[in-house]
Length: 299
Ligand code: NAD
Image (cartoon, helix red, strand yellow):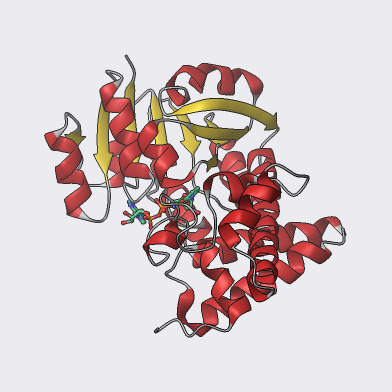
């Protein structure tokens, strides 16, 4: 049993914290919103009335916030949590942010004698609820090993990608590929439909052929083909277009800094941004099919 402070109880953070509570850890929670705090307190968490209070006197602090500016606000502001945590507290940020933003926090932590790990996740809201996330960690190997049993109560796989920031780089590589393959899958199904073929049948054909991929297996973008995919519930919930836009932006920045060509990622980034600008930012990213089909988001 560990004493854990958990900050950020949104779509991902709340179910992650719930799995820690279920595993028997002593979890103190904080979010700017009161409702998720109250829900988790009813399930066994302790409420903190500020992020600082949640971080004090813990063995591990986990944050799950929207973007880099929130993570910097939490850790780096003058009265940020680096100033209040106990000497041996391990800091674990699971938000998806840039590698540079993660490294900035890690080096500020190091100056205070603390260790900060970037540990973004893959697996989505369903994976967070089921405790089957993949954690992709960057930071000192011994710190990753220390936190591994705790992460394994929220996930099925924990990888150590390398030094500080490496978790974020590996995560953005994955999400860039995810963004590309979702558009490619939508494009192939649209071609099938435009030629009078049944997208459900063509999905089965591709699943048994060399075009098989994760979108076809568990996240088919064509409405009605897969009962459990967001496409079959009007693209509500799931992984928002605006989040893939953010992640592709992080990948494009990292590509620019490393001077590598990212032609497919760049095109995917432009297409999802256009899709978001047409009013689809709050829909699941597989709704990019609508961009290809010219469907008005208000219909
Ligand atoms: P979310 O917007 O649902 O939740 C973020 C939570 O952080 C909110 O409840 C908000 O009130 C809280 N918050 C913001 N600033 C805070 C602060 N200073 N102190 C305390 N709480 C604060 O976002 P999410 O979907 O849970 O995603 C979190 C992170 O995980 C993002 O970086 C996202 O890119 C990444 N991610 C999301 C998914 C997904 O499918 N949703 C999958 C993998 C990774």
